[in-house]
Image (cartoon, rainbow, N blue to C red):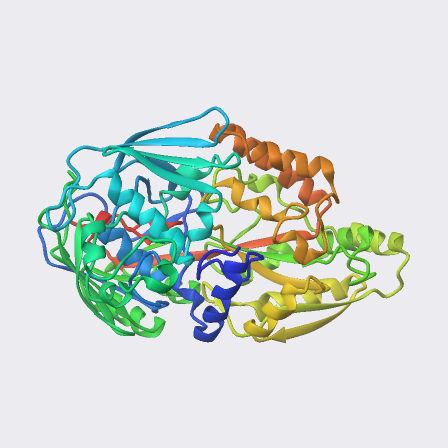
Amino acid sequence: MGSKIRRVLSGRARGLSAVALVGVTALVLAGCGGGSTSGTTTTGSGTGGASAGGTLTVDTSFILEGLDPARSVTPTLTIATKGLYDTLLATTGSDVTPKPSIAASYDASPDAKTYTFHLRDGVTFADGTKMTSADVLFSFQRLVNLKLGGSYLLDGVAVTAPDATTVVLTSKTANPALPVIVSGPSFVILNSALVKQNGGTDAADAATTDKAETWFNSNSAGSGPYVLESYKTSDSMVLVRNDKYWGSDKPKFDRVVIRNMPAATQLLNVQQGTNEIAIDLSATQSASLKSNAKVAVNTSPSSSLFRLQMNMDSSASAVSSNDHIQQAIRYGVNYDALVQLGGAGAVQAAGLVPSTIPGSLPASEAIKSDADKAKSEIAASGITSPSLTLTYPSDINVNGVTFATFAQRVQADLQAIGFQVKLEAIPATTYLTKWRTGKMEFTMTYSYPDYMDTTSMLSYLPGGSDAVRAGWPEGADPTLEAAGATMGSTVDTAQRAAQAQDIQRTLNQKSPYVPLIQTAQTIVGSANLTGLELDPSWTLDVAAVGSN
């Protein structure tokens, strides 16, 4: 899960540092939102149409470190960034397949190491400057050299611009996810001349010499349908129409106001106004609106996926490392009860790839509870009255659900089949320190993909960054590791998705992981609004929202 600030509690180092901030703010509710066409429910009206102007208001609980898109990627910032900037390729709503944007097309080498992007002619920044490959090169090099945000996603990737309309990404190893990666929030294209004028640099020492951070808090440097008018820390952001927007789909509102509001206030605001959106309502709050004709409620499974993780290292735990104990836990959990606790829109996770990404397992393949089988596995383990400590972070929640809610349910389920389970709730910062040791016996954690491609799950395989936290080193399962290497070098998306499914089937039979549920993410808006679709990468595309 490592994913920026929203990729909380991941095994990746960059995500782990992000969790600390989320733990302090305790506002993960602001949404790792994602939606798939499967399982989405919508109530209220709101289809078709386009706005003639006016103001769109988006209420969300701010998780925000600043407005420089290369320095930070948070749920709040991605909403604004989607309106202010463009990327080489783009995804649309719940469809995570990259399509042309700044790049009109791209070519991939058969070995998935070289990607050549051909820029669209006529793209201009908000100040009228024509975009060239030099802007793409600057944006990516600055991102890498700042060593923040999503910079790690270009580890081992060289970026070149052989001419004004061509950008080439060359990876040292096969990297079929690059088209998906460059369609994400970290990879927006900046007006390089404007950023340089205001202290920005893409030099190798940018981490210490780049001085544009403060400037970005009052200005934008993009080619998107909106430009930044103002930003008040912990209060609001105001975006205004870009009259020089190059695209054919012009902005539908004159202004977009993004406000920092607690969920209770969001619930009131969305019922009282027009052109209002609430991002952070819990399943209970959203359910209270389903009969309200003034609002539309869109609820989907998010990309946030809870899992149990057992330590495979016998020196860390003779209990959790026992194959039969692992199977007992796998079949002893009451998944239906967890889904109910997750609220409307939550679903059982069939595997470690959430349903928002191609390559997820169908719901029919989800692990089924079987208490009798679980008890027989305990008997076969040779361990009498097995005892485990289940550790989880105490001070964060995911889409309105606390870890304690699920942990207590798991404790009850496992105790019912013969386990003794002690719950250890610790602050996120303490949890992360313990997590890094790789000695945590049994934990409940959750993930949010770093990018919307199946290769993001490679960290779960032996030797991967998540796996080493579970005492599962490289070489522990050569067959599984070889399957991962094949998936990681397959260019064809459909083939890669099928390979990911096979890997997850294996993981569901024998691994440190037990997928639990995907939480629900809800977006609520005034009934007159259109385009209220959850976006796994960007949370909400404000440029796509219109009005009847």
